[in-house]
Length: 171
Image (cartoon, rainbow, N blue to C red):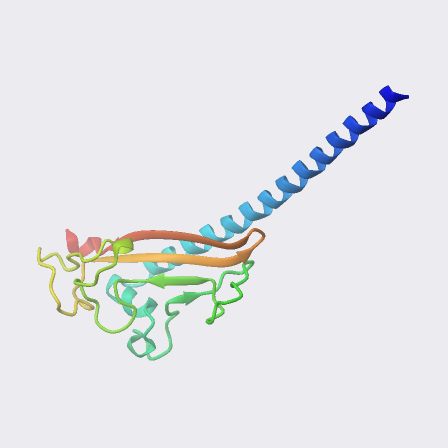
């Protein structure tokens, strides 16, 4: 009888560990699916940026709707929604995706300090970092995309930084 009880205790513990493992695996699988959605959305926005004339990318995706290339309010702007991901509870704009340039509105400046974008940086290729507006003459454009959402494991974030370049003008 004692052997049977010990066997039952061991069997119960093993079933508990198996259930816990299965539950964790399911949670990780869902979290990985959420991350894959975020990665794919950020990649898609970067691809969309490549569809615009390089000189218009900053004006198309910054926070200022008055400088949109095809008329005020016609461009996507700096925020983007990602289907399948929910914004965090304290998110005021309701979007999970956000695009960051050296400046979000106004002139594109080389002198901005932003370690995540490698700024300050020479944007127009004249080998000088200055205080002038380079919105219309930049050759490179640092950009960072951040996707932040409320997921299975709480607040989750995916971030990607890159530098877009006007390869036609660099030749």
